[in-house]
Amino acid sequence: MTFVLQLFTGILTRWLFSWFNRRAVLIKVYFFMLIGVGLVNLVYSVKIVRTLTEAGVKVSVYELRWQVHKHLKAYRRITQEKDGAVGFAFYGYLVSFVLLIVLALLFVASMTEPVAATGSL
Image 1: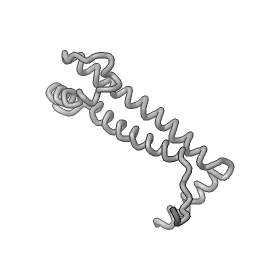
Image 2: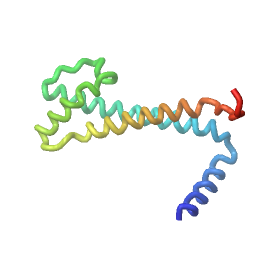
Image 3: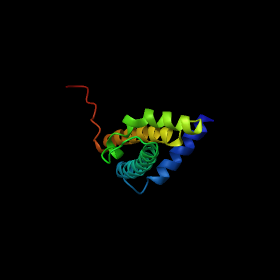
């Protein structure tokens, strides 16, 4: 089964990237995915900050993008007390933040040229 899956993905990849430079396509894909996940992260940040301000926690505008992670424990506690479960923005923010880091690393790695292994220093 894995061989069939590898064969299918190999044929599909070869067909998709046959007319394009694979490296250039990957850079564009990672870039647009990075932008998309960043926007999703921003939406969850706004949701967390709104919930915190409704609960009476003082949050500055600067903390909207740069220090939301500082208030995650308070958001989790407030939503557990209010609804009996952790709010969806808590896990959404964490997952999108991890994806943001992974995609940023993939984007930077796709932009660098691979070093040829010559066997000598």
